[in-house]
Amino acid sequence: MPGIESLTNPRTNLPNVFTDIDAREKDFVTRFGTSWQALQEVLGIARPIKKEAGTKLVSYTASIELEDGNVDPGCVIPYSKTTVAETIHADLKLQKYAKAATIEDVDKYGAAIAVEKTDDAFLNELQVEVMDDFYTLLKDDTYAITSNEATWQMAVSMAIGRVKDKFKKMRKNVSAITVFVNTVDAYKYLGAANISIQSLFGIDYVQNFLGATTMILSSDIDEGTVIAIPADNMVCYYVDPSTEFERLGLVYTTDGETNLIGFHAQGNYGTAVGEAFALKGMKLWYEYADGVAIITVDANPS
Image 1: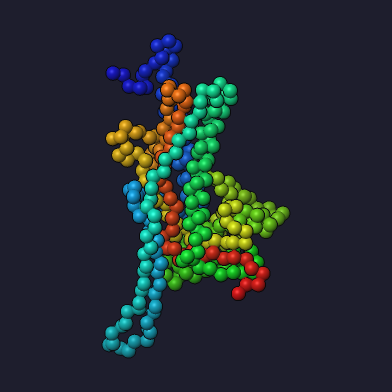
Image 2: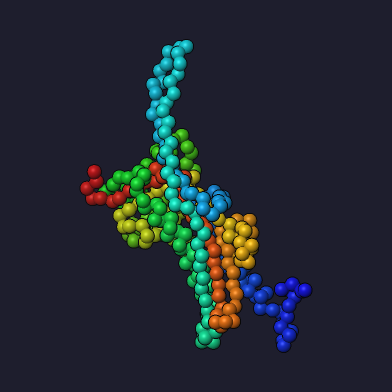
């Protein structure tokens, strides 16, 4: 029996439409992967870590109480007390998405709009969701370093300083700092300054600003709030959508070595609808929950 690629339409002798669907699927996951790789470089995140579905997400807090280092010759050196606390969070779960375009949509708007434009919107929303989820995590101040400062510029500076100080005390290197700020706050400060704002993965960012390697501008961050985190403290866990699901008859197109997302398109003759399905188990996380600084702007700081 010939493979799918060799099938033709007996009336027109043209290649089967599955070939176009294959290209569409590959384009979708490749664009997602390419955008993610670029964002990964901007944020300074190391290689994503593959996890199995159902894996618990864990974060840590660490501290040490130094004993007196003035020890007499020949005496036992006392151990300093180190404490590492583990906090287990929610499972890393697969998320399932679907969209559809009807033949009426194609007839009314054309395939370029009904299919391609909605694919673009679908891809964008999946990207935005990753960051929105991360913002929710970052704004949780349960373990974060918190304080307030009189000005926005000082808040940015102190957010960077506090996380650097924290990791220095933990004897860990900090290669780069990422700062998250409110979009309006940033533009108020930038004013007429000739600073290049770039856009990627649905976010706006500025590089090398006020001591931060990268400053992310987001309306998800409250006005008057600055959040800083070392790039070394950020990780990305993911579930490979291509794993095991073939046994269910579910085959998703993925993108090479790091399969962050799976995508499949098909036609449903029963409803005369073109369906598209996405499968994603991806989450930005931090290793040390107390390695995040949340600084608020207050005209009369304590």
